[in-house]
Image (cartoon, rainbow, N blue to C red):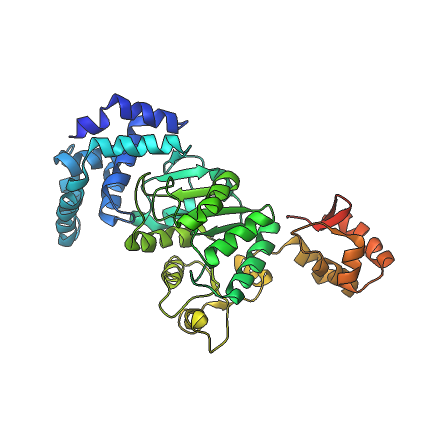
Length: 397
């Protein structure tokens, strides 16, 4: 069976079309693993780390091992690991089908996706913190260079969000994205969608991790949004094209959202919200965790209050709070710290999402046009603002 999978000329040709790198056999082995193993399968991860993707696949499918490498691994491990590996082989066996691998590769090519592997220049190293549970490979639609920027802020929350939650998510995500941060979320309804839209709306970067293949828009109502994210950011999954989202895959996907972010912020969540699962992964990885408070009578915010009480989450009420969590400070913040009150008012008046004419900046700040112009000239020299089409916008850095 292994030769049918790895020796297939058609499959190797498909891999070459998806990757610029030349390690075609390893890429095909990892693509095959993404079909066989569920996301976060730690046993598959242990074997691949110890043997490499190709040799781990040979052992998993045909029991073949070189120089007794697997026996040596299992002899020194906890006896439970040997049983887990045996169970893993039984678990992967029903999915062994060369056609499924070829279909996944063709599906990726048809939607313009690429196959990204650990060790690639654009592989997100933050995911390696997941160790044996790190993704075996990533299928990416869009530009993976998006996640090379910092800070990266993971924003999650309720699907059935309230108007308050949507507003806060959009305000925070838009402000952060306008200043150069990457917004990471899961492409779902509610808070996820609000965060993605806000980032796109200010011309910022955003990445969506899916619980199914990148060729499937889920939820269907976000078809247009996910298409825009793929065009201007990146849509990512560790599952191959054609894979359907399931409840356990959403939970597994959450660990990637938490791992890629430098911080995780939960905007709105019920007592048992799946967003708490993402928060738990972030806490386990040692990532800073923030939560937006809501009304004490709101069931939609009960999960956030639980994070504040039980997980030592930091109370987040603005993008400035998130920047503090990131350990970074925007140019706006640095200027404002040392500026006179009029300059602070002007910077607060310029949202960074759209260019504002001078008269509008004056109206929002409560200053005269002459005073606004005098300050804007200095702020432009300092790089805090820049002119756009007859108006002014806050700098993205």
